[in-house]
Length: 217
Image 1 (cartoon, rainbow, N blue to C red):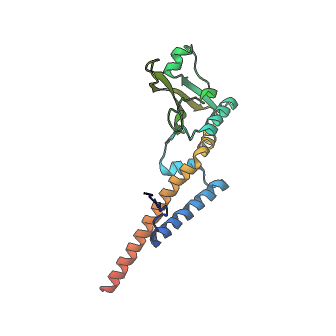
Image 2: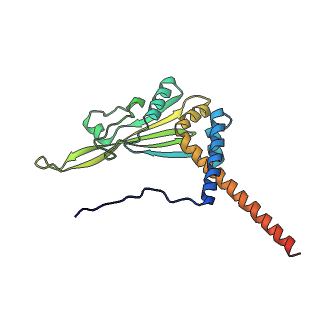
Image 3: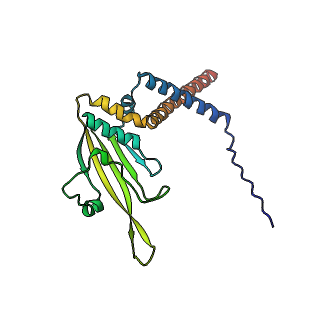
């Protein structure tokens, strides 16, 4: 017997109101993106309006922040950032004779033993106007017995803490944030969209109430 499977990948059709709201969101985003690219609206301004003093980002194995890490290392060499603290992973510290040493900014590219999106490396990054923290996580395999092929993953973390090294730290922070411009602009767009929508609803409600008051006079 032969079976025939039919997969319908078409998305549900959006209502006219949903289409209209999507267009409003897109217009707001285009306007914000245009102002950012022209230099009239900075990412630090967006963060200030949003009340965001800290951003946290996670990168999995297939989405490594390698350009970002290279930029941190470059800025450290230039002297606009200073690596104030760093530490090796527990296992490599014990087994690779690294006692008494600290990793440099060039040691943020770690290697995991996994495949696809398992086993790392993964990164936890925290950004603020005071410091930048990078946690580089990597996995190693431990064999449970040489007579079997059973093994398990174990994680270790290298930690790097950067501080701004020049008086104009805001400009350096802006440059660092540019690596996450899309995420920040989206969050800012969402906030402006909610504000615009709330104002629209308030104005509409006032108009309806005003018309009703005129009718019942």
